[in-house]
Image 1 (cartoon, helix red, strand yellow):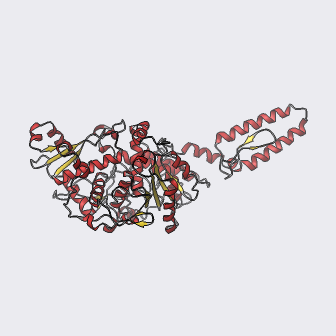
Image 2 (spheres, helix red, strand yellow):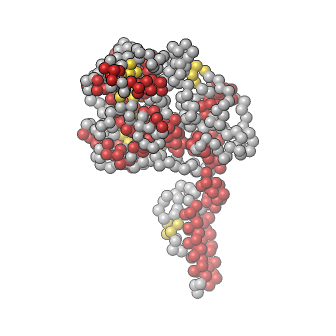
Image 3 (cartoon, one colour):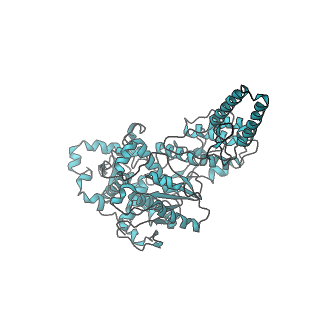
Length: 565
């Protein structure tokens, strides 16, 4: 909004340089003040002519200053009552200048159906509302991923149809599935992922889901997520990857236990203080129950049927032997990390790099229902309006007055399935790590990150969208200077200065800091390109998820090398 422009009548009226509709309460306040001026003028000794002149001047001001407000009062009233409520952890999308009440109606419907209690008060007036392409039906997203086929030898991996995935109103309809022998959470071709990714993910699932959890030959490694004030979430994830390696090498089922970052009221029931609050279980409920029973049996500990990380040298967690069940696939890895404009030629720890990527991809193969809803909130309030505007263009001009046709329903259900929700693509993820990281690596300015972003844009000029993740407020402030980019980020308090990451996360609280971290991590992993800092564990792990998520060949442009290059 531009600077207030002083008028001769003594009132400052906000002028919007973009001719955007002003908030309703601002317009009303100006009218009240103008009315007061007219009333006072009637009592002056200048008479009717002065009063008439004032009214004429005021009318001209209102006409030229608020033309859209005067013409769209009814539509604006609709918008104010149907606009989605913005959650505390997500900044809101800017409305389009071309107001369309149908967009507002569709947004309201999606808001109530997907982000509310699964029902919509608008549904009676919208007989055939289109699905929300950017949202997921969280209650059914991964229901079929962790089951085995009739023989009990292979996972029964299946893709539900678009109807079941995206329409929570009709969960009991007949469902057609199309199956496949490969893990459904791996996308792209084999060349788009680290070597042996599909085979490794299949074997890890089978390893974690034995036929009989109570069989005497089934052994377990049960361990909490490392809880240390010196470790951030990235460090905790790296530590668990090391513990997972021990379990695989010793043919033990990994059972994760207490996670301090899930110890809050929105993690319900058995998910409270556990990984399953944010991601699907690492093993079956039966195996978890059996492992918990063994924990209380001295004989089981003595015979090493059950162990934990304390049963092994501490160094194993960080630098233990990488599983060679799949040979040494890291020896064929082609580096695609770019620093200083050059592709790095080698890595001193490619074995750990490969294994950590596989371990984290398995542990984070699908979000829980709770995290799915958090992601829905983030996408809806960043991309919802854009999705609605695109969707409205595909509907009949008299929608919702007439029912939408469904001639292509079978194609949607059997062919055009969408495992991943829609994003405005192409999208670049930029993770900026500053603050207390200065004690471990050289800190780079936001400008340095954006210079790399602009190099990617040179090759892909259609690239305009950035998902920005950072703990620093100055980075958010500086992003406003890059007007040729559209930035998306969660709306949480950020830090200034060099406060430690641990202290910053404690200031947010467990729920806010954990939700924000996982939402940003998943969103960054889903973007088409990535700019970050290899010296940051968080950036390193995002790169690992992308390298097992079909985005290996998109590369990783980094402002620095990490300690292993």
